[in-house]
Every structure is written in C-alpha cells, then in structure tokens.
Length: 258
Length: 361
Ligand SMILES: Nc1ncnc2c1ncn2[C@@H]1O[C@H](COP(=O)(O)OP(=O)(O)OP(=O)(O)O)[C@@H](O)[C@H]1O
Ligand SMILES: [Mg+2]
Image (cartoon, rainbow over all chains, first blue to last red; front, side, top):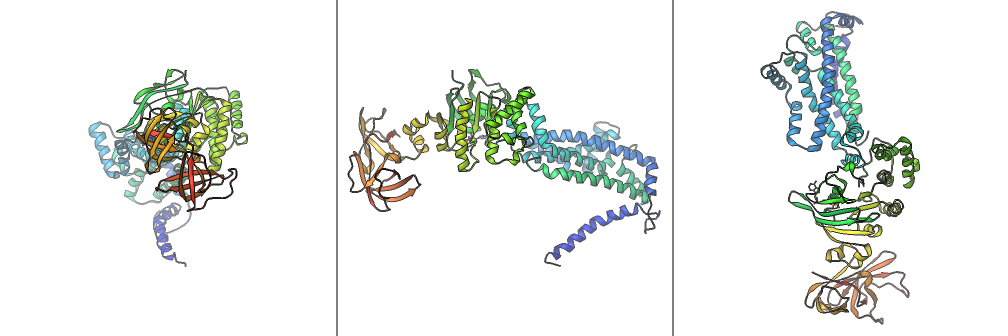
C-alpha cells in the first residue's frame, strides 16, 4: 500500500458504515424468511405482498401526489424567489427564503402544526402536508437557481432587452433556458426531499392521512418485517435515481453554459 | 437636426456624481467616441442612451423625440457589450436572428438577413457553431452582426475591443471603420485607449469625472487641446511651466522657468503676467548634435538621459542644463540620419517658434 494508505482505510470504513446497512435492507427484502436474521433463499414474495397491501398502496399514492405537487409548486415559487434574490439583492428576502432550509426540521414541523391548527384553524390532512412540503422545498430551489444566476454575465439579460425583447420574452427566451438545469435540479431535489420526509410530515399529517415514510414507521413499531425492507428498497431506488439525475444536471447549474 | 441629443444630463449614485450636466449632440452617420480614464462615467452615459439606466436630471433625444419613457426594447439603438453578451444556448445564426425575431420579421427575411449579416463580418461558415466554440475575435464579430442586423439608428459599443490582444485589436479596428462606413450607421464608441479613439473616430468627447472636457475631431484634439488634462491624456506631451511676459496677436513670449525666454504661438486668452504651461509634443521637438548648425529660435543645450527605440521612431529624454527634462521624437528614417545619439551625449533640442500651445492654469 502506498503513502495514501492512511487515508484509504478510514474512508473505506466510512463508506462501509454508510452503505452496509443499506445493502442489508436491500438484501433481506429478497430473503425468503419471516424472521430476517439469516439468509434462507431468494424470493419476491415481499414485493408481491406489498402490491396487495391497501394501506401501503394508499400511502404510496399520497406520497407520490404530494411529492409531485410540492415539487411543481415549489419549483415555480422557488425559481421566482431565486431570481428575485439575485436581481434585487434584498437582504431580508434571502433570509426569509433560506430560513426554512436551515431550520431544524422538528422546529419547522411544530411551528407549522401550531400555525395550521391555531392560526388557520385548518383540519390536518393532505393539504397541510403539501403546504408544509412546499415551504421547505422553496428554499432549496431558490438557492440552486440563485447560484446558477450568480455565475452568469448580467449583460446577457440586458442584451436581450436591448435587441428588442420585452421583459417576458427576455425571461422566456433567455433567462429560463439558461437557468433550466438549475430549475430541473431543484425540481428533482424537491421531489426527493418531499417523498422521504418524515418529521415535518409526521407533525402536519393529522390522523387520517399517511405517506410512505409514515406508513413504514407505523409498521416497524410492530416489527421489522421483510415487507418494510421491500418498501424501503423501492423508496431507495426512486430517491437514488432522482439524486443521480439531479447531479447530472446540477454540476452544470454552476457553470456558464448549458 | 442631430440624431442624438444629450441635454444637461446628470446621474448620481449616492453622493457620487457619475455624470455631471453633460450636453452633447451626435450627427447621423458619425463615428463618435467617448474617451476618458476609468471611472469617468462613459459606461453610465452609454447605459442611459440604451435605456438600462435613467438620468436624474436632463434629457436624451433621439431624432428629436425624448427617450425618457422608452424601455430599452423600444429604442432603435443596439449595444455591443464588452463581454459580447452572446446567448450561450443559441447557435451563432440564432443569436443573429434574435433581434429580427423580436421585430417579428417573416422567416425568409430572417434567413436572408442573418446570412448577409454573417457575411459582413466574415463568419459565413460559423452559423451553426455555439458561442463557446468561437475565439474572442469571432465572438466580437457575432456581437457586431447581431447588433447591426436590424440596421438600428445607432450602435453603442462599450470597449468592444478591450478583451482582444494587440494584433487582433488592430485588425478589428480596421474592420470596424470599414463596417461603419459600409452600413452608414452612427457608432457611439467607448474606450479609455486614446490611440484607438484617434484612429477610429470622426469626433471624440474627452471625459473626466463625469464631465466633457473637450469635444472635437481627433486632429484638433491632438493639435489644440483645451487644457492640461486633454493635452496629457491624448498622446504624450512635454509640459513646461511658464509665465506670459508678452502677448501679441503674432505670438507669445514666455518665461519658462530657468530656461529663459521662449517664443510660442498666440493664445487667445493669454495676457502678460498669467501663468500656465507650454505643451509641446515630442515630435515637435528636434534633437540635433551639440555642434550642428540650426536656424530655430527656441534652442537649448542638454544631454541625452535615456532613449527608447521603438522601431520607426526613437524617443529621447534630454536633460537641459537647468535640469528640465524634455522628450524629443526622432524618426529613424529622417533624411541624413547617420547615427543614434548615445546616453550622456551632449545634444541640442530646438523647436519652432510656432510649435506647442500655451495652456492657462
Ligand atoms: N450602479 C452603480 N452604483 C454605484 N456607483 C456606480 C454604479 N455604476 C457606476 N458607478 C460609479 O460611477 C462612476 C462611473 O462609472 P462608469 O462605469 O460609467 O465608468 P467608466 O468610465 O465606464 O469606467 P471604465 O473605463 O472603468 O469602464 C464610477 O465611479 C462608478 O463607481
Ligand atoms: Mg465602462
């Protein structure tokens, strides 16, 4: 082993620490045994069982619905916020948009709960979860969009106006295409954050509504069944795909060109 | 009626007055240059013409109409930015087509005009390329083609050659001159490089601290600077502090420090007793061997302190007996030129009685 051996070993340990538990979850989701202690044989039974678990399917539908809607709305609002933060450099605005990102999730969860119930007098449910998710996603989108804009030559946007574009044409034909990688990355990021959020959802969901993370939590309160492993594996797959997609477009979000 | 009229325009940023009551007018077809040191307000003035910024006081007229409430897209004026500002996500052809599309021209016309505009800047074969695939000079040309394709009334160029190397710069200067002549569009050109300004412009406005110090043709600016700042900024100049001892319509007699009497051409406002400087261009000062015959009225003995060989000319720094330093330019092709002067060699400097210009303090 060469001189960097002292760096190699610890990083290997760190990666092992991070990925071995995940690997075990995936592995045991295919294990043909109810007591997931040792490997018995390969099966897809747990996935079949998932497909017939009505509570789980309902939770999955909720999660998808919330994640898609939250990602869509947060991307639109976050993009606008990012552009505004870049263009007007209002300190207060930056602070307002970024606070939900930095705030401990539990605090955000509790305060949203109090806000929904005591201030808005809202019945908790899909809508409250959705609003909560949008709230914490906007900040992420705004940061990414602003970072992309910060790296760009301001005169490009002036050139568009100069050459005859109205403010709206300039946005549609120049600004939007140029920040598109950041917007896409923000949308993927929002979807990922929303679909696996537990803490904030827990506080804002009320009794009637469940999402995948909430459903998993309910199940493991009873026992860690292979079915939990299976649904976790699926969730992991979705999240991983989106992260890979986002990182494909995101590095470019900081460069000057598409 | 002038094409563009700027009347008493002032622009302040906080306590800083970036543009201070500037008045000037530009005729159609002119190559007009705003020249001045960094921070004098050139870009600010240009941005107000383009519509990116608005005056705090005063007004700007184009074709006799006040531009005050016209947004940039409604002004028949296009800008070439120092950074080119090409749209990175569009091909060269689409960049050039952009202003035509904004003007809602039919597709056939757009195609024809884009082709012609690219031909004008010698980029016929680059239409499909993207900006990041082009060299600096090529980007510059695309920016020019894009700004000219709709034939605006006026083109604003903010240090468009600033990012190019010396050789390319010179080539682009020549192309700019012929392009401007061919399309006949008024150019307002911003630079802080005076050789560029002299080479390109029909008229130059020399700016300092937000004000226009002098506005004239290149040769008149060079030959008859209005004050010390202009004399110093445009080309090189020997500045000899002097007092007027006699002023007549035929010429001045000046007491130049320890040099004594010097004859100078007449100056309108000069009166006996006034203080100022005698501004002498290095090429107006002759340098000859100490024992050479001469017939010039103003001549002084000195020694060569330094020289700078540039190729076509050599600049000599001569220290006169009283310590005054004078720069003299000698063309290396001068007739009868047998040899160079060496450092420490005794020489004489001389200039005609009508050379130089007396500038009041
Ligand atoms: N948006 C602004 N806010 C505050 N001050 C500004 C702004 N724009 C310009 N200034 C100031 O106004 C003055 C003139 O600036 P301007 O950019 O017009 O100079 P310039 O002549 O173009 O200089 P350069 O040759 O360096 O480009 C400078 O002192 C500059 O700092
Ligand atoms: Mg400038």
